[in-house]
Image (cartoon, rainbow, N blue to C red; front, side):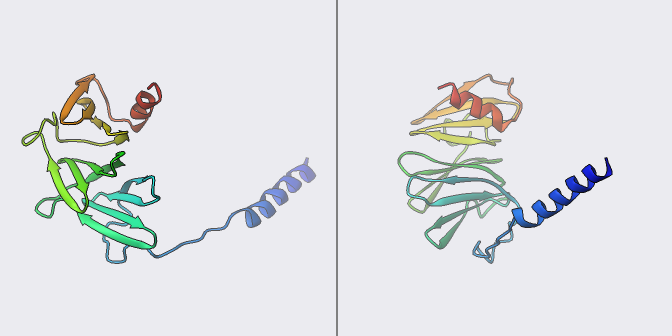
Length: 170
């Protein structure tokens, strides 16, 4: 029994030493105070990377260059989810509504200025030009064009998995 335990320990020790390596890069925007407060990421068809942060910033990496967008300079905004639709428009779900970033122009959609039914948003996914958004304790929201539809109003507890299950069912 002792020899079996010793062999197992030796195998795990040797395997653990050679099986993993960690490489780090410091190319993330160096002046960003948001690390490690990053919530979501998305990659578009062209290979650009989109990362949203808890401090209301959207970072876009194209090639080796990073670009930063402060979503709402006038208020504390927490960005929870990011999606890119089939027209390459970037959408960010926040605790203060939905932000659209199109060709460098940021547009803020809220319950007060658009058809968005609720401002407290979490997860967002794009399916073509349709957006699927989870609003905690409110429901699942579909945005198609300028129209919004709410499913399961008041019956949804926040879970990113819920959105994946809906997307996978077509």
